[in-house]
Image (cartoon, rainbow, N blue to C red; front, top):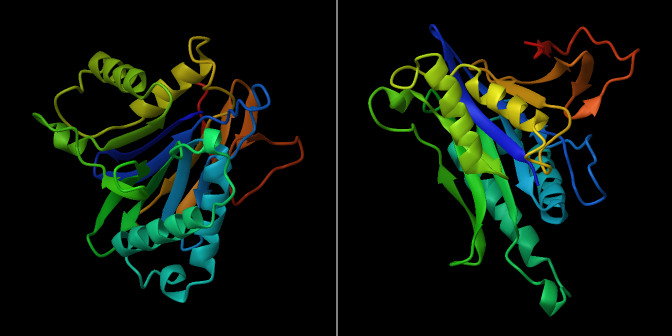
Length: 255
């Protein structure tokens, strides 16, 4: 499985969307080079997954294709909220094409997605969790809202994958240490929690290189190279020594 997070980072008067994940797949052992975040072609949004790759990878690729070849989606004439509906329809249409599944293997798809970006019509960052609803037998969505409580409406965080409850508790612990449990938005506390769980042997399904993308109010989705433990990676893959780029920013997580 995996651990994937998206949150609105607020530092001073600056806001940005951060999407982060580990890079581990377990089907062939611990394979620590899997891309789990895909910046979508229109530039203001990314999609990330957790769960069964048999479902997730084909669906994510076709979601990206559907934007590339649909002018309204590609040019952002279709607002983010309506794009979300389009992508749900694409995913469910794909689900309808699945045939000849052995009865003993026919279960509800254990695939979850985060759609995270900037909605220019509302002037705000939005996160939706896309998931399979057994009651209707289709994929549907749920919006992510603030945590609630005093001062916590500004804390917008969505987590999918393994150990979601534990991940939330680790985030809370980092907030407590900084005295930020009651007021204000999130900074990099979710990233610190993700790094902690990637490094811990308690979570064998979570590991490998941390991958990160950010969405800005300028409606740009930017993948980041990540420097951690002396190594550099991009979207889950270690970079070769000669892979230097002036166009890809680097996030240093060696803190």
